[in-house]
Image (cartoon, rainbow over all chains, first blue to last red; front, top):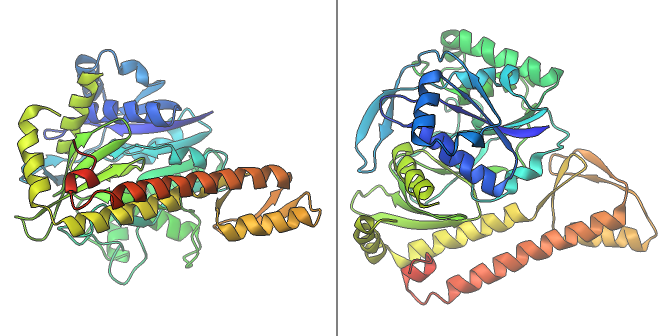
Length: 285
Length: 121
């Protein structure tokens, strides 16, 4: 069985329940595959209260007690900073919790506008995850690092990834959990700031170890080998069934930049603007 | 979109640099074409190019019914039914290039109107 697995844990700033429902709505429309959810009881209660007719989007719901992570920065629609506790550790339990033989893990702030992810099913590779990223606008306000540290290896982005339930993937997830449990040691070894646990970094290090510390990669890229990112300072301003309009921030705060994306998926870092667009979209249906 | 957001959108379109928006939209179309011309088959992922189509066609004309091809990750993939593979990659490429052509044409017709580039009424 094939399906998509989402992880959602509300915090004081972001309504991850709405993000999960919105994300599932677009997955249902464009991919048409089964969807399951890893969450906590509080987030699920919020989801059922806000979206009682949409809770059945999820084939299976797994409840976990989410571990605390550090506080991270979120940008609201006015571009102001808000801080909230980031709950992102349940993803590393995906191997044990998935009900599928082939699983696609998707961040709930990943907007699916086309069916390119469906090309991954039946893959020969055990795990597929992208290194390649593309900025949505040509003049992003921030220069995003693409490496763990300037002299180290490229980041594998855990935003969206595929795995088969087999021995190789199990070993890989064991390694991810080991890195997470010893994050301080690995942040010192690989020389990055380890204050905030990041799945991207844990998965990248696990891949480095699984690849025998070589330049080759055990993890292969997804069929569409570039993930499009819309960074925090930019925001989504309009959402349709297969397209979205964005306001891209530039280095000059007075100069904004509109971009239309049709039929391609986008990872939207400004979660607050996305939750608002999802609310509008879901209420219009 | 609710009415309160419309002035923001109008202002954004009004003040945006047309050439910058145009070039960005062109770049997105190019990468969409690249995505659309990707084809997954028998566990492998291929970039469908005129070269791949021509090579497969040549092999078919030489009477080959099966073929081993390298996918994007240089993984050797056995194509057991070459005719079926050929028919599929031809459709993938034609669909991808048609979409690229018509979307590009739409942009070319925008005539310096940012709202047309972005399909905003």
